Length: 155
Image (cartoon, rainbow, N blue to C red; front, side, top):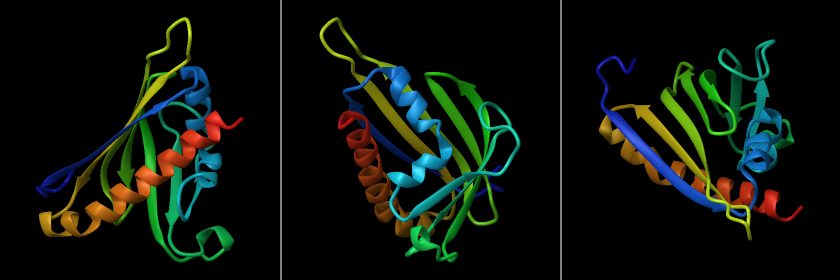
């Protein structure tokens, strides 16, 4: 898929004090992702809204949430859908190529509901490009996931 470009990986794990089904429902609500993702608006571009074959687009950039239409467009197609545990996507846009995954693990016990949220991206890009985008991407996604966690635990 990467046209012989190097494979680069970004992985982030957070722990959320919420039941796995609640975490899954929130993360799989594509359009609401823009509520917690930094500078990003997300929308479904297919008639299918959940499951394999669902197409999603995300536009990230300054002022995107105020209607500005300039930014980085990330087009994705869901390739694996196993609620409430796993979703995988292929990035199929012109700029971003690779795969993405979120995986949930139920760590709950009789006292507390806890879910591990593992987010990962495999990005096909020359090393120099990946090194330039790694830190801002990692920080942006980490901050976004912490905002996601806060949205679930403050309800």
